[in-house]
Amino acid sequence: MTTTFRNEPLLELRRAPERERLLAALSAVDATLPLAVPVIVAGSRRDEPSFASVDPGAPERVVANATSATAGDVDDAVRAAQRAARTWGATPASERAAILARAAGELRRRRHELAALAVRECAKPWAEADADVCEAIDFVEYYARQAVLLDAGPQLLQLPGERNTLHYRPRGVVAVIAPWNFPVAIATGMTVAALATGNGVCLKPAEQSPACALAIVDALLVAGVPAEAIALLPGEGDVGAALVAHPGVHTIAFTGSGEVGLEIMRRAADPAPGQRHLKRVVAEMGGKNCLVVDGDADVDDVVPALIASAFGFAGQKCSAASRALVHERIIDHVLERLAGALDTLLVGPADRFGVDVPPLIERSSVERVERIVGAARSDGATVHRVERMPAGDGYFAAPTLVAGARQDAAVVQQEIFGPVLSVEAVRDVDEACERIDAQAHALTCGLFSRNPRTIAEVARRTPVGNLYVNRGTTGAMVGRQPFGGNRLSGNGTKAGGPDYLMHFVEPVVVTENTVRHGLVV
Image (cartoon, rainbow, N blue to C red; front, side, top):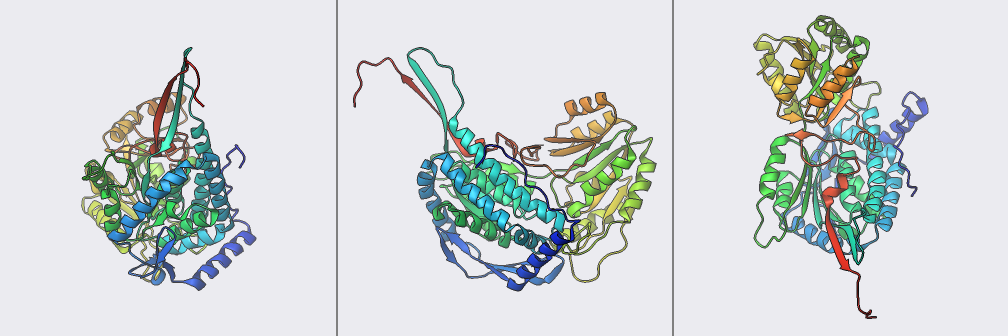
């Protein structure tokens, strides 16, 4: 493994041979459906299917039949991870990194297959699915290198006759509770961060994406991660709850809704009988992201960035723009251009090249979008929607612009996780900052302005974790834009950044008196 980290290049989907390779991978995946996803504990696999994941664009297509983990499986997995944490944690960081480098190679080898699986199981359009796999590879490569650097430890002050050292040791067992919207990248990132630092891992994937999680675990096992160090525990929320409550779990890495994240924090804060440690929760919980458009902004840059940020992957990214705060002087022009651009969007199944807006993950998500848009319309807001919608039973929601909604409306205040953008007039950037500051979430924000003073002032005032200037709000890259929010958007330091591994270790300082009389050998 070289010391230099470089992001994995995205596929050139404009090239016909690349598209053909992806389609061939999709055909190969389709030929194996439905996949069987077992519970995996200490290398043992239990296959008793009890729930299914389906293609959101064609729900009659079952992608995987998965086995739900039981309370007994959770207990066995935690105990195995405890045993592994002692041996895997004692393995030199460089050796762990070498194994993880092989895992990155396995993901790279299966790149087209994994992208096809994300297309089928989570309806990620091809470009998004490929980027998901690339980000997973990036996480593995980046965290493996960072773990080696962390193992060296920082320099402390030294005095004559005294030796001070600081090193980090793994916390123990990490429960990873992963989302469906980045089914390969985020599950891989949280899992590998824990493994790179020597912990044992119990991975509970979202019930919508168990097949993607199985591919990750298989890649890690093939690469040489000890069987006891990684468990796969598919299932519904009860499996995650059992992991959170288990006294043998030391760290919980969660990405998902604020409601679930806050409940995890509450439950983790209460030590179970016999528990001798405090659980640490690393939670990324979404946002209500604004993109501010100043009066001097270049509308030719604003419109495509807003469209991509709000409607890419049907708005199902925690970083997606859901509010456009536009200077009142140019809002009519921006709305006209946005409406025109919206009408060009292609809504359709994720496996079709050129689709802009795929289906939502499940029917309840569509129903939520319709409720919120309907309420805004009833309250007098102006609603503009794409009219050309696919036939069939897929979970499609029309991309929607809402203008003039009340400030207390759900479309303005609530995270929607769908293709809906609220466009609001502001008198100036100062008012836009006030609206952002009034929010409970603080994940991402975008700003379009040509004035360096305005950019500096917004950077100073905004509470968000990631501010994007004169570009869209999505597409953070590992090592380049470490990602994570503040306030109710999350806690801890940023994924894909130099401090993230600190979540999974404990610091130990050793102070030695070096003025000795003799030496025992």
